[in-house]
Image (tube, rainbow, N blue to C red; front, side):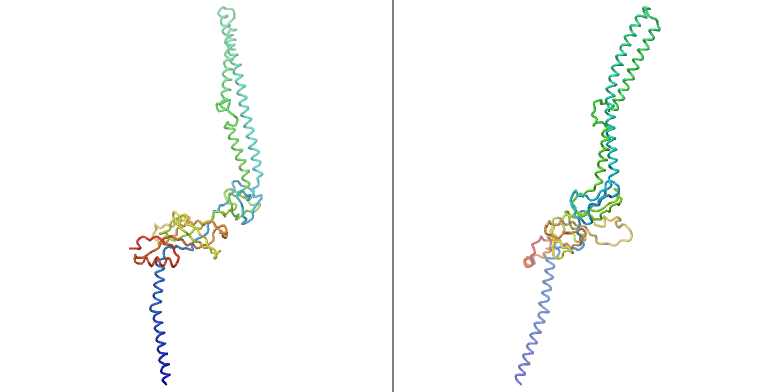
Length: 380
């Protein structure tokens, strides 16, 4: 019977000891753990800014042909990689070849016209010299006949005849001189002007170069390395007012993170960024904050919000932040529009009061976090 009493007493003592341990855990250990976790979150919180409203972006251009016409040949397939200078598609060049031939003919015609004017100018100079000689001769003949008429050696009718010849010679000189000035004006006042410097030739040359460019533009080439998208089909009519296809760059890729305006307090260009892409959950990219947009995303919409109305609701705006990714050769390929998660190390965190700084340093060492500058106002 005594053994039974001892056993009962041992069980009672054991139960009481277990109860004390449970109470100790509930009343001491768990609250301390909660306080420690809360302290860690408080001291390390605010340094990293994260958002899932972020996407991969790349330079993407709409390929618009410089000339219009029927697509004669498509040299690339949908989603094909292309290099700078590769042929994308070709527009029927027939009418542009005809226009080029016509422009070449017009330039040759203008060249002949200018050379003819220069030759005519030289001929007119000779005519003017002959006309002036005739005028001088007629003047001398008239003067001699005038002397004879005063001596009554010739009649008045003969003198009138020589006077008429002299006047005709003067009119001939004036007429040839006017023709010479007209040709000179056609040569822009410079009879020795080079054919290539004449405005008519330069105009024809410009038309020829434009026609040659139009013919060259029937071959649409890639302006940069990228991926061909929305490619046209043969027989489709292309014109400069509508994009024929798109070209997405593979060299220039960045991330656009749309942060809430309340998250921008400590965001600065150059801060480190870690990027996780939904398509590659086992891989992380690193980069830096490149720039912060000059306006909220809503400001770039086609119809910006009109807040000066009676119906107004405050909405937290989002500001686009550009993240430049580090070049990693073995990284998976990123495509424009992919969803990503961005974590920005702002380098700023709350240290709490001065007496907690040793605890902060210990927590940083334990969690392997680099020391960060003190946030303004947190130590007060």
